[in-house]
View 1 (cartoon, rainbow, N blue to C red):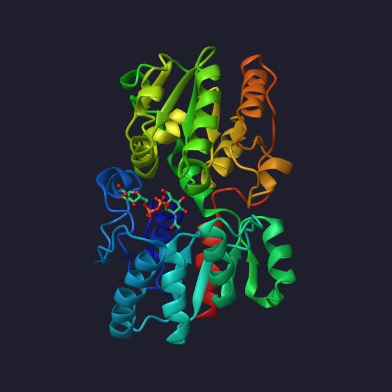
View 2: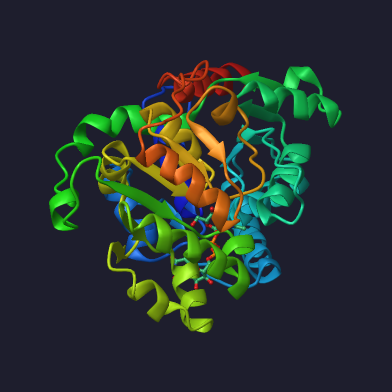
Length: 358
Ligand code: UD1
Protein backbone atom coordinates (compact mmCIF):
# COMPACT_ATOMS: atom_id res chain seq x y z
CA UNK A 1 0.00 0.00 0.00
CA UNK A 2 1.38 3.38 -1.06
CA UNK A 3 -0.12 6.85 -1.16
CA UNK A 4 2.24 9.80 -1.07
CA UNK A 5 5.63 10.78 -2.45
CA UNK A 6 7.83 9.52 0.41
CA UNK A 7 6.14 6.10 0.24
CA UNK A 8 7.28 5.27 -3.27
CA UNK A 9 11.04 4.92 -2.71
CA UNK A 10 10.35 2.90 0.46
CA UNK A 11 7.96 0.43 -1.14
CA UNK A 12 9.78 -0.03 -4.48
CA UNK A 13 12.54 -2.35 -3.18
CA UNK A 14 10.11 -4.35 -1.04
CA UNK A 15 7.74 -4.81 -3.96
CA UNK A 16 10.55 -5.95 -6.28
CA UNK A 17 11.73 -8.54 -3.74
CA UNK A 18 8.19 -9.80 -3.25
CA UNK A 19 7.70 -10.18 -7.00
CA UNK A 20 10.88 -12.24 -7.11
CA UNK A 21 9.87 -14.44 -4.20
CA UNK A 22 8.16 -17.75 -4.96
CA UNK A 23 6.20 -17.57 -1.70
CA UNK A 24 4.54 -14.17 -2.11
CA UNK A 25 2.13 -12.57 -4.58
CA UNK A 26 2.06 -8.83 -3.96
CA UNK A 27 -0.80 -6.56 -5.01
CA UNK A 28 0.41 -2.95 -5.30
CA UNK A 29 -2.28 -0.52 -4.18
CA UNK A 30 -1.85 3.26 -4.62
CA UNK A 31 -4.41 5.39 -2.77
CA UNK A 32 -3.75 8.44 -4.95
CA UNK A 33 -3.12 10.78 -1.97
CA UNK A 34 -0.45 12.23 -4.26
CA UNK A 35 -1.59 12.18 -7.86
CA UNK A 36 0.39 14.68 -9.99
CA UNK A 37 3.00 13.52 -12.47
CA UNK A 38 5.69 15.30 -10.48
CA UNK A 39 4.48 14.06 -7.08
CA UNK A 40 3.73 10.48 -8.13
CA UNK A 41 4.09 9.21 -11.71
CA UNK A 42 7.75 10.19 -12.23
CA UNK A 43 8.73 8.10 -9.20
CA UNK A 44 7.30 4.96 -10.74
CA UNK A 45 9.38 5.55 -13.87
CA UNK A 46 12.56 6.47 -11.98
CA UNK A 47 12.27 3.56 -9.55
CA UNK A 48 11.19 1.14 -12.30
CA UNK A 49 8.20 0.26 -10.22
CA UNK A 50 5.31 -1.25 -12.22
CA UNK A 51 2.03 0.66 -12.46
CA UNK A 52 -0.06 -0.01 -9.34
CA UNK A 53 -2.40 -2.99 -9.60
CA UNK A 54 -5.10 -0.86 -7.98
CA UNK A 55 -5.39 2.93 -7.99
CA UNK A 56 -7.96 4.58 -5.73
CA UNK A 57 -7.72 8.24 -6.82
CA UNK A 58 -8.35 9.63 -3.35
CA UNK A 59 -6.67 13.02 -3.90
CA UNK A 60 -6.42 15.98 -1.55
CA UNK A 61 -8.69 17.08 1.28
CA UNK A 62 -8.66 17.79 5.00
CA UNK A 63 -7.04 15.14 7.18
CA UNK A 64 -10.40 13.62 8.10
CA UNK A 65 -11.67 13.67 4.52
CA UNK A 66 -8.50 12.17 3.10
CA UNK A 67 -8.20 9.48 5.79
CA UNK A 68 -11.90 8.60 5.57
CA UNK A 69 -11.78 8.38 1.76
CA UNK A 70 -8.83 6.00 1.90
CA UNK A 71 -10.55 3.90 4.56
CA UNK A 72 -13.81 3.62 2.64
CA UNK A 73 -12.14 2.68 -0.64
CA UNK A 74 -9.50 0.40 0.86
CA UNK A 75 -12.12 -1.57 2.79
CA UNK A 76 -13.87 -2.58 -0.45
CA UNK A 77 -10.57 -3.78 -1.92
CA UNK A 78 -9.53 -5.70 1.20
CA UNK A 79 -12.90 -7.46 1.36
CA UNK A 80 -12.55 -8.43 -2.30
CA UNK A 81 -8.89 -9.43 -2.31
CA UNK A 82 -8.68 -10.92 1.20
CA UNK A 83 -4.91 -10.42 1.54
CA UNK A 84 -2.93 -12.41 4.12
CA UNK A 85 -0.99 -9.29 5.08
CA UNK A 86 -1.11 -5.54 4.48
CA UNK A 87 2.26 -3.80 4.26
CA UNK A 88 2.30 -0.07 4.96
CA UNK A 89 5.31 2.28 4.97
CA UNK A 90 6.05 5.59 6.65
CA UNK A 91 3.64 7.95 8.33
CA UNK A 92 1.30 9.60 5.84
CA UNK A 93 -2.50 9.67 6.12
CA UNK A 94 -2.81 6.73 3.70
CA UNK A 95 -0.56 4.63 5.97
CA UNK A 96 -2.82 5.06 8.99
CA UNK A 97 -6.05 4.68 7.03
CA UNK A 98 -5.02 1.34 5.52
CA UNK A 99 -3.75 0.05 8.88
CA UNK A 100 -7.04 0.84 10.63
CA UNK A 101 -9.12 -0.91 7.98
CA UNK A 102 -6.89 -3.99 7.85
CA UNK A 103 -6.77 -4.37 11.64
CA UNK A 104 -10.56 -4.25 11.89
CA UNK A 105 -10.84 -6.92 9.20
CA UNK A 106 -8.36 -9.05 11.20
CA UNK A 107 -5.77 -8.80 8.46
CA UNK A 108 -2.27 -8.54 9.98
CA UNK A 109 -0.44 -5.27 9.30
CA UNK A 110 3.30 -4.90 8.73
CA UNK A 111 4.58 -1.38 9.37
CA UNK A 112 7.86 -0.49 7.71
CA UNK A 113 9.69 2.41 9.41
CA UNK A 114 7.97 1.77 12.74
CA UNK A 115 8.86 3.27 16.10
CA UNK A 116 10.04 6.71 14.99
CA UNK A 117 8.85 9.41 17.38
CA UNK A 118 9.28 13.20 17.34
CA UNK A 119 7.24 13.47 20.57
CA UNK A 120 5.46 16.36 18.89
CA UNK A 121 1.78 15.62 18.53
CA UNK A 122 1.24 18.80 16.54
CA UNK A 123 2.74 16.91 13.61
CA UNK A 124 0.04 14.92 11.81
CA UNK A 125 2.66 12.29 11.02
CA UNK A 126 3.31 11.66 14.73
CA UNK A 127 -0.34 10.75 15.27
CA UNK A 128 -0.21 8.49 12.20
CA UNK A 129 2.94 6.77 13.47
CA UNK A 130 1.66 6.10 16.99
CA UNK A 131 -1.66 4.69 15.82
CA UNK A 132 -0.22 2.59 13.01
CA UNK A 133 2.34 1.05 15.37
CA UNK A 134 -0.36 0.15 17.90
CA UNK A 135 -2.23 -1.75 15.21
CA UNK A 136 0.70 -3.46 13.50
CA UNK A 137 1.60 -7.10 14.00
CA UNK A 138 5.08 -6.71 12.47
CA UNK A 139 7.06 -3.58 13.29
CA UNK A 140 10.12 -3.12 11.08
CA UNK A 141 12.46 -0.51 12.52
CA UNK A 142 15.25 1.53 10.96
CA UNK A 143 17.16 2.61 14.04
CA UNK A 144 17.64 1.69 17.69
CA UNK A 145 15.47 4.56 19.01
CA UNK A 146 12.51 2.87 17.32
CA UNK A 147 12.87 -0.18 19.53
CA UNK A 148 13.15 1.87 22.72
CA UNK A 149 10.07 3.92 21.81
CA UNK A 150 7.97 0.88 20.99
CA UNK A 151 8.97 -1.01 24.15
CA UNK A 152 8.06 2.05 26.25
CA UNK A 153 4.64 2.07 24.57
CA UNK A 154 4.09 -1.53 25.65
CA UNK A 155 4.64 -3.23 22.29
CA UNK A 156 5.93 -6.75 22.83
CA UNK A 157 9.52 -7.37 21.69
CA UNK A 158 8.53 -10.34 19.46
CA UNK A 159 6.73 -7.93 17.16
CA UNK A 160 9.78 -5.68 16.66
CA UNK A 161 12.38 -6.39 13.97
CA UNK A 162 15.47 -4.24 13.38
CA UNK A 163 15.91 -4.49 9.61
CA UNK A 164 17.56 -1.24 8.52
CA UNK A 165 16.26 1.38 6.15
CA UNK A 166 14.42 0.57 2.91
CA UNK A 167 14.73 4.17 1.71
CA UNK A 168 18.48 3.60 1.68
CA UNK A 169 17.99 0.40 -0.37
CA UNK A 170 16.53 2.62 -3.08
CA UNK A 171 19.22 5.26 -2.69
CA UNK A 172 22.12 2.81 -2.95
CA UNK A 173 20.40 0.98 -5.81
CA UNK A 174 19.96 4.18 -7.86
CA UNK A 175 22.89 6.37 -6.88
CA UNK A 176 25.02 5.35 -9.86
CA UNK A 177 22.21 5.69 -12.37
CA UNK A 178 21.37 9.14 -10.97
CA UNK A 179 24.81 10.34 -12.05
CA UNK A 180 23.60 10.24 -15.68
CA UNK A 181 21.05 12.95 -14.94
CA UNK A 182 21.75 16.33 -16.55
CA UNK A 183 19.74 18.21 -13.92
CA UNK A 184 22.69 20.37 -12.80
CA UNK A 185 23.14 21.85 -16.23
CA UNK A 186 19.39 22.12 -16.79
CA UNK A 187 19.06 24.20 -13.64
CA UNK A 188 22.32 25.99 -14.25
CA UNK A 189 24.00 25.07 -10.97
CA UNK A 190 27.60 23.95 -10.43
CA UNK A 191 28.70 21.02 -8.31
CA UNK A 192 29.12 21.96 -4.61
CA UNK A 193 28.23 25.58 -5.34
CA UNK A 194 24.60 25.44 -4.27
CA UNK A 195 22.52 24.44 -1.28
CA UNK A 196 19.38 22.38 -1.88
CA UNK A 197 16.22 23.54 -0.10
CA UNK A 198 12.96 21.68 0.61
CA UNK A 199 10.11 22.93 2.75
CA UNK A 200 6.61 21.57 3.22
CA UNK A 201 5.79 20.91 6.91
CA UNK A 202 2.51 22.57 7.90
CA UNK A 203 4.25 24.03 10.99
CA UNK A 204 6.72 25.84 8.71
CA UNK A 205 4.64 26.79 5.71
CA UNK A 206 1.06 27.20 6.94
CA UNK A 207 1.54 30.56 8.70
CA UNK A 208 2.95 33.77 7.17
CA UNK A 209 5.12 34.40 10.25
CA UNK A 210 7.03 31.12 10.09
CA UNK A 211 7.46 31.24 6.31
CA UNK A 212 8.62 34.85 6.54
CA UNK A 213 11.22 34.06 9.18
CA UNK A 214 12.61 31.20 7.11
CA UNK A 215 12.72 33.45 4.04
CA UNK A 216 14.72 35.99 6.07
CA UNK A 217 17.35 33.28 6.46
CA UNK A 218 17.25 32.44 2.74
CA UNK A 219 17.76 36.13 1.89
CA UNK A 220 20.98 36.17 3.89
CA UNK A 221 22.31 32.77 2.78
CA UNK A 222 21.77 33.38 -0.94
CA UNK A 223 24.12 36.37 -0.60
CA UNK A 224 26.90 33.81 -0.16
CA UNK A 225 25.67 30.68 -1.87
CA UNK A 226 23.15 29.82 -4.56
CA UNK A 227 19.96 28.26 -3.21
CA UNK A 228 18.01 25.74 -5.26
CA UNK A 229 14.42 25.41 -4.11
CA UNK A 230 12.15 22.79 -5.73
CA UNK A 231 8.87 23.90 -4.26
CA UNK A 232 6.25 21.50 -2.86
CA UNK A 233 2.65 22.16 -4.05
CA UNK A 234 1.53 22.87 -0.49
CA UNK A 235 4.26 25.51 -0.03
CA UNK A 236 3.55 27.07 -3.42
CA UNK A 237 -0.12 27.40 -2.46
CA UNK A 238 0.79 29.08 0.84
CA UNK A 239 3.29 31.42 -0.82
CA UNK A 240 0.51 32.71 -3.04
CA UNK A 241 -2.04 32.83 -0.23
CA UNK A 242 0.30 34.94 1.94
CA UNK A 243 1.47 37.17 -0.93
CA UNK A 244 5.08 36.05 -0.41
CA UNK A 245 5.89 35.04 -3.97
CA UNK A 246 7.39 38.40 -4.96
CA UNK A 247 9.69 38.24 -1.94
CA UNK A 248 11.15 34.94 -3.05
CA UNK A 249 11.38 36.11 -6.67
CA UNK A 250 13.44 39.11 -5.55
CA UNK A 251 16.20 36.80 -4.29
CA UNK A 252 18.58 36.89 -7.23
CA UNK A 253 20.61 33.88 -6.16
CA UNK A 254 17.66 31.61 -5.37
CA UNK A 255 16.42 29.28 -8.11
CA UNK A 256 12.78 28.28 -7.67
CA UNK A 257 11.58 25.23 -9.60
CA UNK A 258 8.86 22.57 -9.64
CA UNK A 259 9.21 19.41 -7.52
CA UNK A 260 11.87 17.10 -8.94
CA UNK A 261 11.82 13.38 -9.76
CA UNK A 262 13.73 10.74 -7.80
CA UNK A 263 16.89 10.36 -9.90
CA UNK A 264 17.31 14.08 -10.56
CA UNK A 265 16.82 14.87 -6.88
CA UNK A 266 19.31 12.21 -5.83
CA UNK A 267 21.89 13.75 -8.14
CA UNK A 268 21.14 17.23 -6.79
CA UNK A 269 21.57 16.07 -3.20
CA UNK A 270 24.75 14.17 -3.97
CA UNK A 271 26.42 17.23 -5.53
CA UNK A 272 25.09 19.94 -3.22
CA UNK A 273 27.23 21.83 -0.70
CA UNK A 274 24.56 21.16 1.91
CA UNK A 275 20.81 20.72 2.27
CA UNK A 276 18.28 22.83 4.15
CA UNK A 277 15.13 20.82 4.76
CA UNK A 278 12.17 19.98 6.94
CA UNK A 279 11.72 16.54 5.35
CA UNK A 280 12.19 13.33 7.31
CA UNK A 281 13.63 11.22 4.51
CA UNK A 282 16.17 13.80 3.36
CA UNK A 283 17.75 13.79 6.84
CA UNK A 284 18.44 10.09 6.31
CA UNK A 285 19.50 10.31 2.67
CA UNK A 286 21.95 13.16 3.31
CA UNK A 287 23.49 11.16 6.18
CA UNK A 288 24.21 8.28 3.81
CA UNK A 289 25.51 10.59 1.08
CA UNK A 290 27.74 12.38 3.61
CA UNK A 291 26.18 15.75 2.74
CA UNK A 292 25.69 18.21 5.63
CA UNK A 293 22.01 18.64 6.48
CA UNK A 294 20.43 21.52 8.37
CA UNK A 295 16.94 20.53 9.49
CA UNK A 296 14.51 23.40 9.85
CA UNK A 297 12.61 21.86 12.74
CA UNK A 298 12.83 21.81 16.53
CA UNK A 299 12.73 18.03 16.76
CA UNK A 300 13.38 14.95 14.70
CA UNK A 301 11.94 11.45 14.85
CA UNK A 302 15.21 10.24 13.34
CA UNK A 303 17.76 10.94 16.13
CA UNK A 304 20.38 8.63 14.62
CA UNK A 305 20.93 11.18 11.83
CA UNK A 306 22.09 13.63 14.50
CA UNK A 307 23.96 11.21 16.76
CA UNK A 308 25.76 9.48 13.93
CA UNK A 309 24.99 11.31 10.71
CA UNK A 310 25.48 14.73 9.17
CA UNK A 311 22.24 16.24 10.45
CA UNK A 312 21.94 19.33 12.69
CA UNK A 313 18.61 20.60 14.03
CA UNK A 314 18.56 24.34 13.51
CA UNK A 315 14.91 25.11 14.30
CA UNK A 316 13.05 27.73 12.31
CA UNK A 317 14.57 30.89 13.70
CA UNK A 318 16.42 32.79 10.97
CA UNK A 319 19.42 33.70 13.13
CA UNK A 320 20.42 30.09 13.85
CA UNK A 321 19.71 28.95 10.28
CA UNK A 322 22.01 31.68 8.96
CA UNK A 323 24.76 30.95 11.53
CA UNK A 324 24.87 27.23 10.78
CA UNK A 325 24.69 27.80 7.02
CA UNK A 326 27.59 30.25 7.12
CA UNK A 327 29.68 27.76 9.12
CA UNK A 328 29.23 25.19 6.35
CA UNK A 329 29.94 27.76 3.63
CA UNK A 330 33.16 28.58 5.53
CA UNK A 331 34.14 24.91 5.38
CA UNK A 332 33.17 23.84 8.91
CA UNK A 333 31.02 20.82 8.05
CA UNK A 334 29.72 18.12 10.37
CA UNK A 335 30.91 14.73 9.21
CA UNK A 336 29.24 11.46 10.11
CA UNK A 337 29.03 7.75 9.55
CA UNK A 338 26.39 5.42 8.15
CA UNK A 339 24.00 3.93 10.75
CA UNK A 340 23.90 0.16 11.32
CA UNK A 341 22.07 -1.90 8.66
CA UNK A 342 21.58 1.05 6.30
CA UNK A 343 23.31 -1.17 3.80
CA UNK A 344 20.85 -1.68 0.96
CA UNK A 345 19.55 -4.99 2.31
CA UNK A 346 16.60 -3.90 4.47
CA UNK A 347 13.97 -5.02 1.95
CA UNK A 348 15.62 -8.44 1.71
CA UNK A 349 15.41 -8.82 5.51
CA UNK A 350 11.78 -7.71 5.55
CA UNK A 351 10.68 -10.06 2.80
CA UNK A 352 12.54 -12.98 4.43
CA UNK A 353 10.80 -12.33 7.76
CA UNK A 354 7.38 -11.98 6.11
CA UNK A 355 7.87 -15.16 4.06
CA UNK A 356 8.89 -17.06 7.20
CA UNK A 357 6.00 -15.85 9.30
CA UNK A 358 3.14 -16.19 6.81
C1 UD1 B 1 2.08 14.53 2.77
C2 UD1 B 1 2.34 13.80 4.10
C3 UD1 B 1 3.72 14.16 4.63
C4 UD1 B 1 4.80 13.93 3.58
C5 UD1 B 1 4.42 14.72 2.34
C6 UD1 B 1 5.44 14.60 1.23
C7 UD1 B 1 0.37 13.42 5.51
C8 UD1 B 1 -0.30 13.82 6.75
N1 UD1 B 1 1.38 14.19 5.11
O1 UD1 B 1 2.01 15.91 3.06
O2 UD1 B 1 4.00 13.35 5.75
O3 UD1 B 1 6.03 14.35 4.07
O4 UD1 B 1 3.14 14.24 1.88
O5 UD1 B 1 5.04 15.36 0.15
O6 UD1 B 1 0.00 12.43 4.93
N2 UD1 B 1 -0.98 18.40 -3.92
C9 UD1 B 1 -0.77 18.52 -5.26
N3 UD1 B 1 -0.46 17.39 -5.95
C10 UD1 B 1 -0.38 16.17 -5.39
C11 UD1 B 1 -0.61 16.06 -4.01
C12 UD1 B 1 -0.90 17.18 -3.27
O7 UD1 B 1 -0.84 19.61 -5.81
O8 UD1 B 1 -0.10 15.19 -6.10
C13 UD1 B 1 -1.27 19.60 -3.11
C14 UD1 B 1 -2.73 19.76 -2.78
O9 UD1 B 1 -3.05 21.08 -2.95
C15 UD1 B 1 -2.82 19.38 -1.32
C16 UD1 B 1 -1.43 19.73 -0.79
O10 UD1 B 1 -0.56 19.53 -1.89
O11 UD1 B 1 -3.84 20.04 -0.67
C17 UD1 B 1 -1.00 18.87 0.37
O12 UD1 B 1 -1.09 17.46 0.03
P1 UD1 B 1 -1.38 16.38 1.19
O13 UD1 B 1 -1.37 15.02 0.62
O14 UD1 B 1 -2.60 16.79 1.96
O15 UD1 B 1 -0.18 16.56 2.20
P2 UD1 B 1 1.38 16.93 2.01
O16 UD1 B 1 1.57 18.29 2.55
O17 UD1 B 1 1.85 16.65 0.63
